[in-house]
Length: 328
Ligand code: CP
Ligand code: NVA
Image (cartoon, rainbow, N blue to C red; front, top):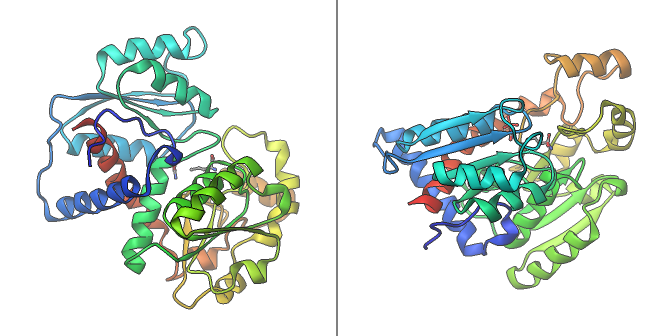
């Protein structure tokens, strides 16, 4: 499998075999790390990390993975560069492309990261846009494979805002990997029909299925994986909280949902999650709406079915694999 020089912008750009390769390579790197086997095979390379939105997991994963691979990192925070304000993405791409070996970009529209990739001349990795979060997909599928041993045929249920980066990316990934994807949510939050049609086409070849339903009982019945994400994403205005809470509360992941899934089902979340009052926003929502937990109850989040921290760890191993495969 030769992926050298490729961008990593969205999983629509990759074949099922290529996606499975990233997953397996991630597991290899995880093993190497656990066994203390050095893998600084990209010594001498430099990468730039552009974050126009905040991050814990993605930034730390890129930094630790880069250091393990022997690379140097420059971090550009949401206010620390000229990008967008004084300099176009196209010009930024042409400048960074001459200094670095790879660029990670987290920001707003998908068209921005696509533009960056078009002009950089070096691999660009999408660290999250409004539309897609592809590096998260490799970690998520790796985590599922670690638990079940396989992916094809598993029933994957996404609850919450399925129109945004996580819902979109998971639907595409499940379609590519032959899984049974269900968006179980209020129809206002169904993924857009163009992407649904694309995934249904893919599904014809892979044996996947795509279902959109508002029925929680039917949607989550015998699920292998129950997945959710925050109801309001980075960059969205605070004013949408009230309508989101009203529309999505019936799709909260709670004990009843988990009991309706298979006994062996796992709970997943890309994190960060609102499952208690230990955050500033969590407290604000409590003051305004009297809610102590949102997209997932604390009980499910802390339960033995929850694999969220294994999933978070896998971000680092998978980002390492993505960088390695596209640079080595
Ligand atoms: N899941 C994820 O991307 O987390 P961060 O926003 O902390 O990077
Ligand atoms: N949908 C979330 C994902 C965070 C990893 C957001 O965009 O804020």
